[in-house]
Image: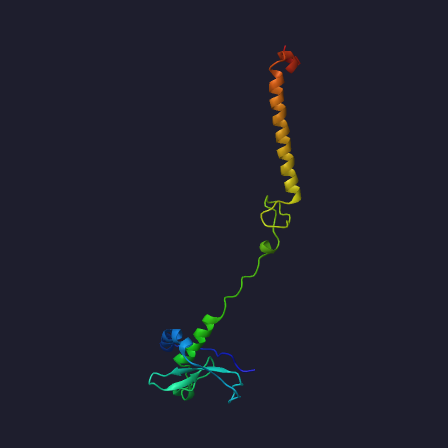
Length: 162
């Protein structure tokens, strides 16, 4: 398997020039090897970049034909620009789902698991319904007591009052 990219050590001058070139990388013509060449397998893609003196060289994230790379062994601005361009093309890693996303907890806060986020568990729902029903019955008895109590003498309502 061929190397996909190389480690690029920091070099402030070349990094600054590469940052200027990175937006031009998509405009550089693409060339794909039909047969293996040197250490590159068939199918390896290169881009045709123009050097600062007008010469054209093949470049990818691993190597370049320019003298700066071939003779001095420096990672030139064109290789750095291709590496930066390819890093920008990588999709952002997906955020992993948290436990709370996978297993929804009761909306009331008891901690029980529920089917959908924002729902209350059976126990909390039952308690809420019971409290609401009890409050409605008490209100009904208060209203009935007030209605009936208005027509009864005081000792019937509270026999110990006299």
